[in-house]
Length: 149
Length: 160
Image (cartoon, rainbow over all chains, first blue to last red; front, side, top):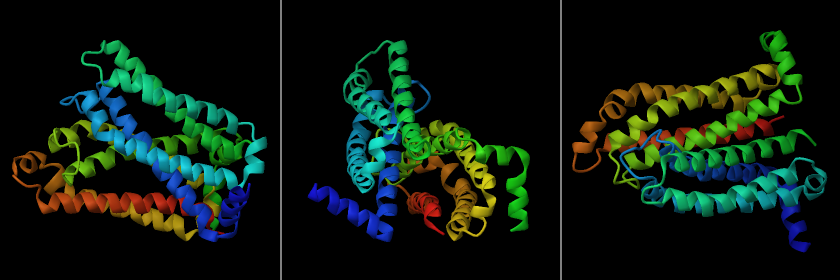
């Protein structure tokens, strides 16, 4: 509670703190989801065909994890600054469920299929499409949280 | 101001900004494009700097992602202009909006300067034993411009 108030107060009372937290949140999202999307595009055979999806995943996964950590921490800070509003928001809990699904999916099914030696092409494409849909849904959830109160 | 008012009074733009659903949908598409295609720009720039994706040639990195970056960039800019035009009176006096537009122009200048010497000469870059300075300069400028563009976009909401 004390920490919640401390973080919330800082973001509410410092002019630039909220803007900074939002920049980190969205910037981190762009890097995190963008790096996952590169793997998805490869799995969909839409680019970077001279390298395997598994190798692209190896190149990008550290970026993905670090960026998503920034997103989560800045997101928690943003939540705490207006916790009362988020608690009654209709869209916010949906966003959290989709986010949880996207995160679990990314580090289980998506990772598994991306690193398979010879995955059935249809499976790869299906897994990549679901991944893109989940992450785009999280973006929509974030924006709609702010618009439909 | 009169111009701004006339722009946002155009029938479909008024309907657009007053719609409960359409405005946030367009904003979401704008942001989703930033994530999907911003990641490609970042990956290309990091490859030009020689920091990652080393098993892929610069040519592969630049050319295979090019059509997607073009399509994504077009959607992103179209959605952005739609958002700005629908609230033209609010955007017209906003210095961050104009800063963002100037940066957008500079990104165009970057393309004009570096396309003929870097992005269209990727095979030459791949043959070179070390990545030439001009490619690294192009990458660093690209990263700086896109980051500035992104920050200005966010700051638009904070000016009153």
